[in-house]
Image (cartoon, rainbow, N blue to C red; front, side, top):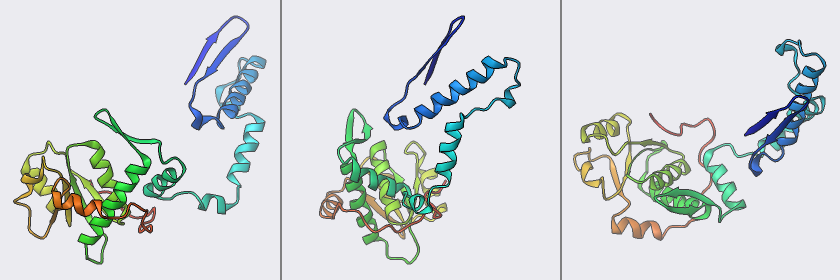
Length: 231
């Protein structure tokens, strides 16, 4: 956020940002100072001729652009890699807030890993699975979606307010192999084709199975070019 106050001989600027922008603020400040200096010296300068980046900022940007490729290649390439890296760095940081409760990155990532292992045990086909998610709580949807990505599959989130006919159509049309659901929605899936596996996370047997699975990260089964979800 940028706040400013204009006075007859001065312009006061205040930049407000969180810690993630700490390295960016000096460059932004230098750029704004450069713009005001140029306009102060030549007020009639067309805006397209004003340099938006200071000489020092331009040098920093060019240096970053020409950094060795190995540094770029070390960056996470998929969403679940980003989550896993952040979990390793800040396991106790809050990852999800839902209905007044929060879950840490360690808990979020661990549950998603258990979910992925459960789904891989159920899916025995050669191709990556397509998995529908029909649940009511946003936090459980997020965990399920992350678990699907960790299997190398793609997810389909179905709005639980859709009528049953629409829900069944989406499951069939997307070619879903598995549907992840909860107690609030499981009864709506009784008419789904029997080739589709229904995973009710509130079922006692399912809960016990998941609880027995490892929370450690799985080998990455997907790349940035793979499908992540289906609309």
